[in-house]
Length: 236
Image (tube, rainbow, N blue to C red; front, side, top):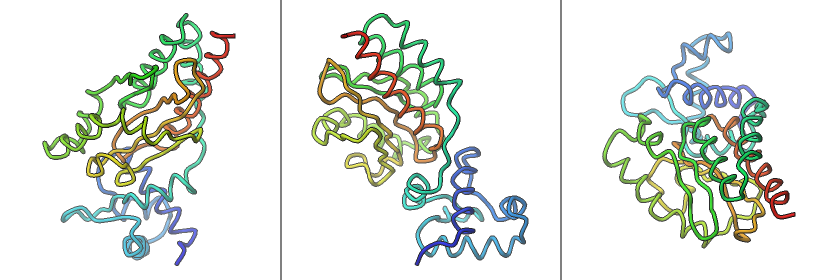
């Protein structure tokens, strides 16, 4: 059974609010946003939970998105975000890098600064990664078990990228969708770009499933385009 338009809007609000506050989202705040009663919101949240889009962690009164909820948000509900200012920063850094490999490193560092996620890119057969501290400072990974899941994903990320070779301009792997580190609670957002180093070059971020997907996916997509154009200029 499909979601109603109001249920979709409520799901989007839960995803966006949870990304910002890192705490389960309750009915009272949503009732104010939608100008309806808390009881109405609770009924809609119950339906969303029944259909697998949100869940109630432990004994909290609030709800958080599931992987299924995030997937619907990414595929259908999120709005395009204005990335003009950060994209100008990336454009300038890449342009001023001077060499192709330095341009890739510079773009990764910029993504780390803007998204506060791990930034990564392939340079030839190597995987360039920065921003580990950002990930392990996230509240989701304060427990040792969760941190181990992330470490497992990071250990196997490079061979997995070589094996699967995602060829879409943008690929988003959410939580359990990751073929490695399924229990890590992470999302991998990567863009492919043409590069003289390899036929399979990628750049992107790795962070918790609790993401500002609208902003991050647009930034990663834009960064892939910038690098592809830069590679053409460097090797024209």
